[in-house]
Amino acid sequence: MSRQILVVEDEAAIREMIIFVLEQNGFNAIEAETIEEAQAKIKEPYPDLILLDWMLPGGTGVKLAKSLKQNEYTRTIPIIMLTARADEDDKVKGFEAGIDDYVTKPFSPKELIARIKAVIRRVTPTALEETIDFHGITLDPVAHRVSINNNNLDLGPTEFRLLHFFLTHTERVYSREQLLDNVWGTNVYVEDRTVDVHIRRLRKAISGDGHEDFIQTVRGSGYRFSGKIQPSG
Amino acid sequence: MSRQILVVEDEAAIREMIIFVLEQNGFNAIEAETIEEAQAKIKEPYPDLILLDWMLPGGTGVKLAKSLKQNEYTRTIPIIMLTARADEDDKVKGFEAGIDDYVTKPFSPKELIARIKAVIRRVTPTALEETIDFHGITLDPVAHRVSINNNNLDLGPTEFRLLHFFLTHTERVYSREQLLDNVWGTNVYVEDRTVDVHIRRLRKAISGDGHEDFIQTVRGSGYRFSGKIQPSG
DNA sequence: TATCGTTGTCATGAAACTGTCACAATAATT
DNA sequence: AATTATTGTGACAGTTTCATGACAACGATA
Image (cartoon, rainbow over the protein chains, first blue to last red):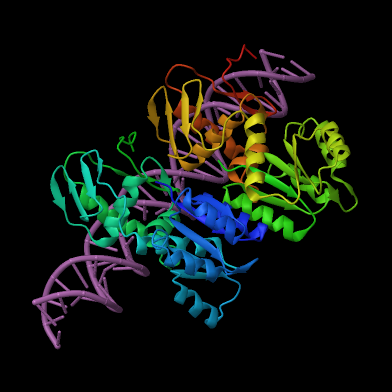
C-alpha cells in the first residue's frame, strides 16, 4: 500500500528533511546521494516515484532522468525534479528529459506532498484500488460506483471522494481542516464550514436504509466514520 | 492530548527548526532562549518534556537540569539534552545531573522525534497515540472515544481532555491551577472553582458502574486520579 | 441559450457546552 | 458544639458549535 519513493539528493540536511516529510505522510523513503547510488538502488525496491535533485556531484540530475526515461524498465517511474530556482531553461531541459514535474527549493512540505500525490494520481490513475465493503456500503473506486445494501447511490464527485476517504480511514476523528486537505486537496481555499454541508449531503445519501449514523459528529473536533454506534447523544 | 514540550535553545534557527518538527508531530511546543526564561516558563504549562541545549548564554544547561531534578515538582519532567558533539565528559555530567537522554547536534528530525517518544514512553508508560486502558476505562485518543467496562461514554470536549490528562497522569495530585494550565491551556482566565464543576461532571460520567472514586479530592491541594481505593481520609 | 447537476457560502435556529453563582454538604479547627 | 474553610451540587444564562435549507455561481451539456 505505501509507496516507495527514492530520494536522490546529496545535501544531507535537505535529504533528511524530505525523508522525514515523506514518512510523515505515509510514504516509504529510500535515499541516495549520488547518481551511481541511485542507479544501484533503483532496481531493488522498485520505486513508485523518484525525487531527483537537479545538481548532483558528478553530473546533473537530468542525465540520470534521461537515462531512466530511455530505459524500458524504468521509463514508467514518475520523476519529480528538485531545482534550486525556477530557471525556465532548466525546466525545459528537465521536461525534455522526461520528468513529470518539478519543485523549486526551498519548498514547503505541504507543496512537496501535494506534487507527489498529483503526479502519482496522474501517472497511476486508479491502480491497486480495490472495492471496499464496509457494513453494507460498497465502493468501487474503479467503476466509480457506490451502493448501500445493493442499492446504487448517486453521489456527486466531492461526496464520492469524501466517502472514499472515510471508508479508507474509519474509526478516527478528522478535523474539518484535515478533511479539506485530504478530500479537497492541499492548496485550495475553502471555508471550514463547507465540510459540514458536504457531510450533510453524504449523510443524507447513505442514510435511509438500515444502519444510521455512519458519520458521527465529534463536537469541537470534527467527524468520525464508524461502523459502531455512538453512545447516546 | 498533545504533549507540552519546552524547548530551551538560544540559537533561533535551530529552535525554530525543532519547534517545526515538534508541531509536525502533534507536540505542543513552548520556547525559551535563556535559563531564566526557561525557569519562568516551566511552571505555566507544566511541560511533559524538556529539550535543553547544553550551551546556553549565562551558564550551561546542566545547571538548569540539576536544579530541575532537585526540585520536588519538576523532578519528574524528563529532560533531553542537546549537545554539540558526543563528548563523553559532557555526557557523564549530563547524566549525573539527571538528564534522561541526549541528542547530539546536528540531528535528524526523525532521530529527535524517536528519542522524545522513547523517553516519554519510558517515563510515562502510556504510549503516544495509543489507546489507554486503566481499570476498565478505555480512552482512544485517535477515535476520540471513551468507554467504561465496554460501555461508551459521551463526554464533552473539556471532560474528554480532563479525563485524558488524568489517565496520562495518574496517582498524583494536581492543583486546580495545574489542571487549568494543562487541560484548559495557559492563557485562559477561568475561575479555580470551575475545575470543581468539571470534576463533578466527569465523576458523574465515569461513575455509575463498578469502581467508584477514580477522582479523589485532596482537601487543600487538588485532585488525584487513582486506581487505588482511598482508605478513609 | 437554456437546463441541469454540482458546489461553496450564508443565515438561521437548535442543541450542546461552559463558566459562574448560590447554597448545601462536608471536613477541619477552635 | 460552634465556627470556619473547603468542596459538592443543581441551576442558569451566555456562548459556541452544528444541522439545515436556500441560493447563487459555475461548468457541462443539450
